[in-house]
Image 1 (cartoon, rainbow, N blue to C red):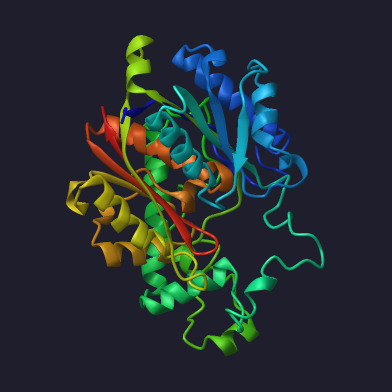
Image 2: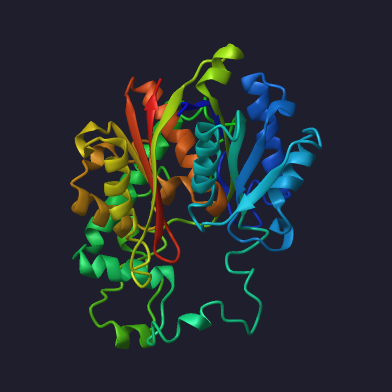
Length: 385
């Protein structure tokens, strides 16, 4: 099987997902189009040679409806002959797009593919694809008679099950902001950014004391009665914010890169996807990590850097407890709590950051994993060329 390699990866600065955010006035398809143009221009390839563009979008409604990725490809000025599709694996949508693109290249179905993602949470709020009066989970009532819960409650349940304290979660959140602020100050994000800018939700001046003063975000009397073990410790400070942003990754066969005289920057070593308890919802990164390491024939100690999406602080902390991962090697430039989580873009954003961090540290192996609604997770191992 041929090697699938990364030639380039870019992301936008991540903006607040609010009307006052820097990217609110830009249509999400236009934002992704701009990112795609920059990707192919940096790589110096003819967009006509791209066999497929696979994009992740979570809330596929309003401005993000009707195969947004195809709209973005056309808006980017790519030839009409370049196809595109939009995938939904919730928060892992653009990581799944990376998997599809890389697996297509490895199999020979593609020579060149782009994996990407976008989300404009300021223009298309999370959950707005669910029509009033509809119940997407109605068929699950017999299997889960007490009902499933929202992600905030799932995060609270994880914190309770792993006995994670508010202080631990706030300390983790503070470190995310500290690392992201330091990375921006040192110019460590400059190469991966599609254009100059700063991620708007990084708070350089936050502190554990400020975070400790925030109120619980998800307290609900009915849920408190159902789950008396919950300590109500999830706040806006130790969870990811809402954001706008886009990211894109150029993937091709190693043989194609050689023919085009392009330098591969990393190759894909292994892929995995896992399912877990949909009530806890956010824990599938634990079995996904074990699964992808087995497929890669690697041990945890072989991995130099990890990117684990910080949807909520207890998700990463529980994962670290179960895997034994060293947190000093996890999200070394900060994570989603600070940088932001533009849902459909986050998988490609993490891959972009992981690639550049591996290069800057002269490291070899990187592992990326993301929790996803419904009790799912993707995991990917890349090896720097």
